[in-house]
Length: 444
Image 1 (cartoon, rainbow, N blue to C red):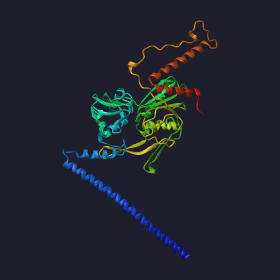
Image 2: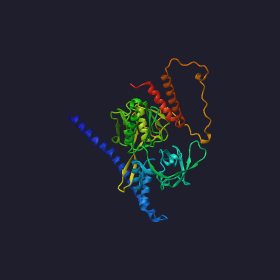
Image 3: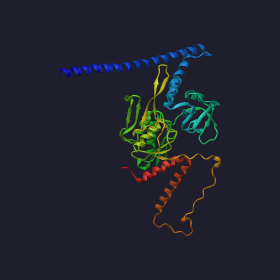
Image 4: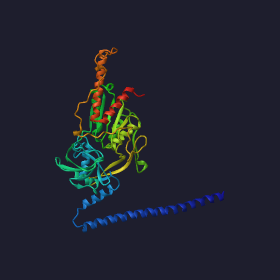
């Protein structure tokens, strides 16, 4: 027994020595790492003082520090940045739904400003700016080498003033200039319309107004149609929707899901993760849903499309989305400015991250390019002849007059729906899918 006790004690002593031998180098490494950080901070202070004392022109110390902070944040990823007090206020205005500018959501790629999407009804949208366009110059001044906030500052200006942006677009051989007149952007975040017996809900962005406006307009359209029983389905149009508030994306998704996960976020530490689940209640009452997306659908739009797709609650139609699968947290600073920092990635209910990959539609449908006005065919379409046009053709004796009238009314409705293909091919395709799903009857 004594031998056993001694062996145990010996093992304990050896364990203490081994732990001490392992811990000591780790502590030394941590101390060295901290010393390196302090040395780098001393280097920053040295450079700052030399700039203040020796730069060819006198510099504003506050602006110099803000530039250093912004440089530190923008070096992390395209979505982290410093917001001056003025920029922080502009961001708050955007989430409320009214601000000044051109009406485009932008990011930075290969040193140039890339358009994520134009916002519906804004000067940029009306001037023909498209998702995926690169802006290389503003009023003849190159944007190459500027950080994103600096490039955006060049595009800002008084309401009513003109700006010339130079665009590089895929499929165009040469860059071209576009004139845009700046305006106050008053976002109409939700538009709704009916196409036959389908309801189209167009969401242009995700700000504080999006969910309540969508609920309001959905109810209005259901009432106009005489009740849910008269509606074949819903199209949720998220094309060129650059995203916005995560909370709104969760509410919009929850509006059409009865249960299950909507989205999860995972940060640097395991404890930073969150999961958001749907509550009971489906505003569409189980009616078929088609979600429209394209390369301008980003962030919150991708959360909604991914959630409804993973739960097989909607068919996603269009082209691959933008692929912004990261979460930014805006942190107020004591200077009244703010810091926008990427703090997590988000994942769809199936556990997939769409960062840099985007949401892939279930059915890929590209929007045909618009034909120039001078290429439009003004010649009237020739109507095909049928049996009914032949002299002496027999009448249809199997149907009543009322039945024939109903067939002709249905045919006229179908022909009117077909006209939509000329205006918006993707939307027409989505509505055709709803008709097919409605014809199959309700889901089990």
